[in-house]
Length: 523
Image 1: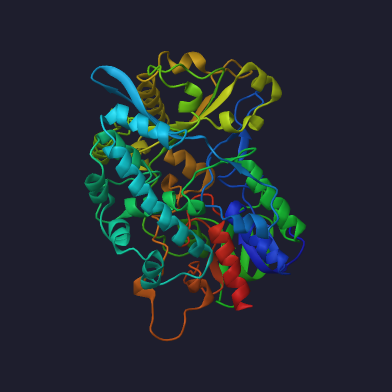
Image 2: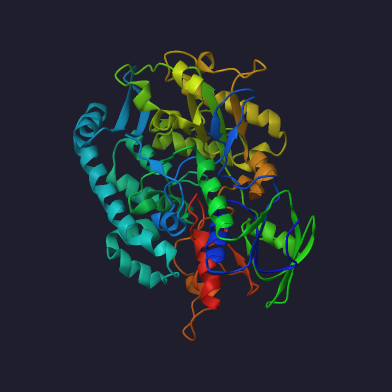
């Protein structure tokens, strides 16, 4: 039960963003209550013993960290760290009847050689360095703005200070610059994948949703690196919950919120255990859920487009490309069926209502970089985890029969992986205490049911560019704090602090930080 009947701030949802907001507000002396529907905090950023009787704590949903600002870790005194991956990616392919691939990592000299062996010259590697040098400079300039008040479009363009880059990434479909910069289909595909994680789009989508997704994937930390959370994702949210409690926030789990009523100055939050008053309500849930709680019309439907698979292996499988050690290939991002043409074909098939014939996906092995998620016996025996994220699997494909469609797509995805292995993956799967293979899969509809993600959309809705909407800008008085920080709703004292806020998405804590800053700015 909540300890009080009224709070300065009630936070709906105990995911990582809600916990960030709670910690900041409690540290500033506010009376804070967090209400969480599930029996644990963490939301999508949790570690779970997914397989019966097996001592392996997997990052069940979200799994890598890039967008979490070090500022938040420092400000909140979090006992949390990440570890760099030594390999960025490996992409297998068959050319001229021979299994080969592209390994990116291990230093410039080694990567240059890998590009030359695949493409026959240094051209693609030179273009790669130039392209990612540009995105690196963009990241250095844009990432620090994410924890500041929203810039105008003109102000962010001035911060970027590179008209060619701005035009290429903020104004033109990403496919145009990818095709102008790279010639090799596989290289083009590796670049494009960062624009399609959780985003159902083509390279030339005129809405630029692929550009927005790409931007957030290349600016994290000011470098674009995607790092492994030591101890799994649950280590982050456990640290955040500890920080919030140490600062004085109250967290109540097993308590679903059923309604929010507000007159713009005060609010009442109704939950399973009664009603509490609040000066402000911060909602760490999707805009769809906010509308439901307020009794308002829902926003346009959002749709996720991914298959998430967790596996535990007794050992890594051998590769057909014998030049590459599986421990390197799987420690980075292992791309499957993600050539440029393959990605377009998969999109067109899914858009027409059929499962892709060659489902694109990517895999990485957390335990190679951080074995602490495995029990000591499993480490000694050489067990490894695999996390797979499948692309171009929109929720609409699963509505007729979610279970059967999920199993068909899982089988097709693993069969596609097997084409690049020297042995079937099934032979490497561990088994749980009941003798079942250690593999679990989640469709977009599963993620909607389990986590409240609308249509399984991992970003809650389409990502937005990290600047104020030009349509909302005024030439008069400065906007109120919630609008200045990108967390405003139609109600002055109800704020979004989840992924659906401007500059939301990913495991970042940025919407939670920004919602807390908006509250503190208003006093």
